[in-house]
Length: 106
Image 1: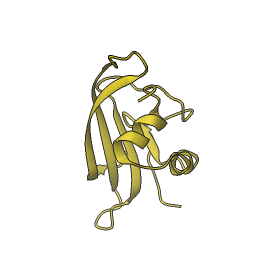
Image 2 (image 1 turned 90 degrees about the horizontal axis):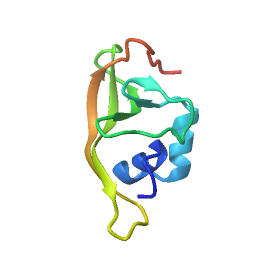
Image 3 (image 1 turned 60 degrees about the horizontal axis):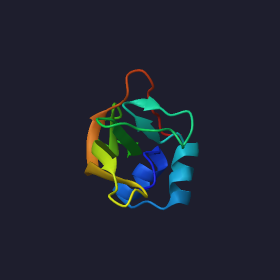
Image 4 (image 1 turned 180 degrees about the horizontal axis):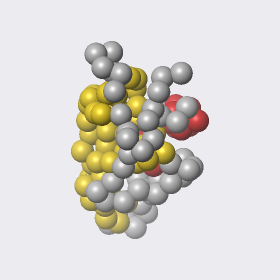
């Protein structure tokens, strides 16, 4: 991976195409540690949780269905031309809606 930009992390961790990540950003469907990000080039750190909001839960509108990536570690590649990043991926996770920045279906 070239850098710890949130768009690179989502692309590598969830296998989502770069143009789809851009669409998700403009639809305000990306959160880092529960907060909206100001730009798609936002840098994440070890321990950060990156959520991609799929939809409001059909069972309870106070919950969201998300895909989540947790950045576990990063180190420089032995060749010196990038980073080796370890992540934990949750393809489908149901969480409470964000208290400081609620997400509503439009």
